[in-house]
Length: 130
Image (tube, rainbow, N blue to C red; front, side, top):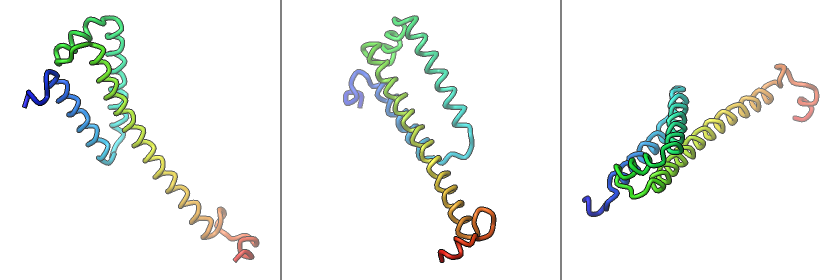
């Protein structure tokens, strides 16, 4: 099995596990606002990692070597790819939720206007148009 994965097997397994987790999160319905807290925590960790990478670039290379990746720049590229994918998933979920809310609002307004207008009664123009 390790021959198939090559020398970077730890990184490959980590990336695949992350992608599976993000896919699961994307498919799971949101029931609370805890995802907002997780997103903020993830952003803070990402910023912390970026600061450490800028101040101690050799440390990134050592961490990359620990995961079986040859260079620190490759490790950063893999990380940025995962963060980008997570960001796309988050944007998709937010847009989907906004679309559902907007559809509900539009339907509510349309039904209200058909049943009796915004004030609860039909104007003469509405009655004449039928």
